[in-house]
Image (cartoon, rainbow over all chains, first blue to last red; front, side, top):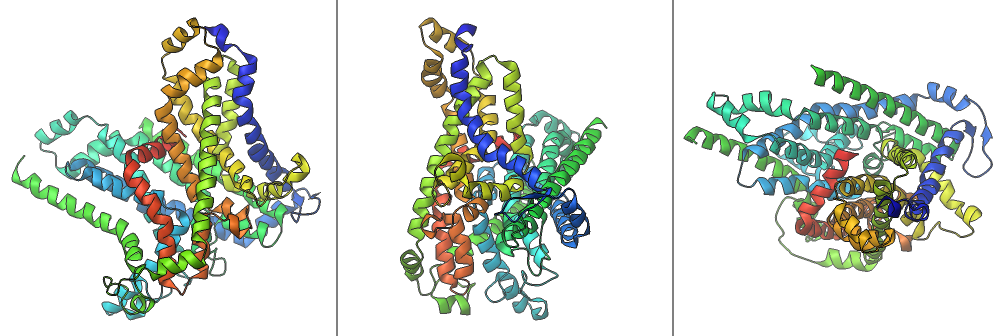
Length: 293
Length: 283
């Protein structure tokens, strides 16, 4: 048996296509990111090594820190607003027998839409100053003064993106959490019901603690995801008004492809990776500590 | 169960229905307004359709090349996803069965790098590499389908290998052992025994990749400049800027992108949900 498997030629034939593509289109660009991050480069001519210059510049570049704070706003919104909704929806669906499949299918639906579609739906249907639902409702209930161009307004642009992003991504995680909730044995719930536990008590004391592993995964995915946020911001505001909604990736994109400063763009990319590693590291550490309790 | 829990059930359904409305309303609103005349959208965007018209769909189809974008998306997504699945299945089989442990472990850890490091990180060098591809390999890929297909396959490989490998590890060895007794080579094992056995997993991996490729925006926007090769996701983003005062046209254009996906989703929902969620749990 082993003799059939121990076949170096077959190993090469099976693995080389994957490794080749992966090396050419992933590892090679990744290694370039690292070398160009330490270079002065406009994307066309030869890159010139300039040591830590780009990093010194980054430390003084306010836009980087503003962008990072916006990334953290994505993290905060995901953990404080999305997560309770995700868990709440999963617990509620698990409680009903009728229509549970319908809820699951419907909630998941935004996950299959492309970001540009989500951007069109929210920029026009909800936030549009003239035909958007939000302003129409405000006008109709006499709060005309509250209506505004949501995505162009300094105070509401980021929040509007956060809401649209949450709409697009919550359903996916509801289904993820729901699978875990269904995994809890019915007997535990029945026993608790016999002991007189209310719906909220059961949710808080039984369901949530028992799906802690999935909650950890969701938190980790949310933290990592919020740091690499790119397309939703790009399509909805492009980082505007005046860079206020920039996240690290949109700023990197602009620096690299509009300002033609490819070297510095790679520095920003590298900083993004560093923050991702640090933040996911902290998240893993904290969730491990919590699980030990 | 008593009366009280029945009433509790009503409350739960009310809350969930509220969320269903939040989920579907933007889609419904855009769908409904895509059948209205421009004046009707301006005057009464809330109201149901009064003067039904397909003019928006006809205009968009004729003037803005939706048909071309649709075909581009189909070509790019189909080829990329099929290539990803075949290559990932081959690699997974080698990683699961061929006992070169050190190599296997090394290859796996390199692949997992792609799941951890965000793809956006390599965007700038990837772009300049694709533009200069000819210098290294003697033929041009910028502004051809390949400039999307090759990166798409690459980015799909890591997670696909993780999923397929998990599935293959749980495959019993007995069938393969029997087949070896019958004189099958390792290639025969793969194509005649393993491939059919893992087909359900391969189908769901294919669907996941298809959806990701179909919806991918950043690379499709960056690595192609020719309008005739543009994919639908990029097209919709372009309509958002181009048709920003022609609301009906914009909604019709968006629906060309939404309707096929939603129809496929309704038919294959279990497969799609299973595929998409299983990937994220393992990765």
